[in-house]
Length: 162
Figure 1 (cartoon, rainbow, N blue to C red):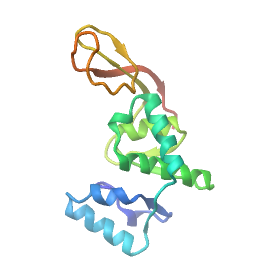
Figure 2 (figure 1 turned 90 degrees about the vertical axis):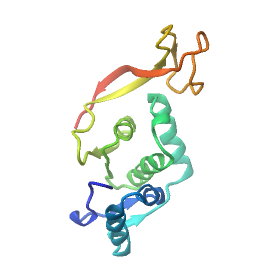
Figure 3 (figure 1 turned 180 degrees about the horizontal axis):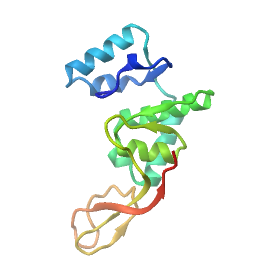
């Protein structure tokens, strides 16, 4: 929301309740958010639970689940819900993990202050000491062989078509 002006667009705009909590550290952005909600320019809506789970599965498949917040999953799920209701949602975000998962889910996204992703990345985790590879959704955090802290790196990439 930091670089987004809800009053600059004529289309219906939606967000999820968690976005407001994430804005609490920026008074100007929070004020812009409140005014947009109060004027009906921005609607707050909770996504369906099954669609949140679907967003999580897509993120786990790519290896981005650990990089996304609860609010991020809700944003992705709400966009999916709107798409299935016949809308053409556009997720406005500079978060590369959200963009990556949105592309995986065939959702449109637009960057605000960055160029956005050029490739959809599928991540893996690996041990930087002994180079053992782990699935992207491994939550252990440590190598089972040598105990080093795991890192992640791109395993494959696909060009994002826009």
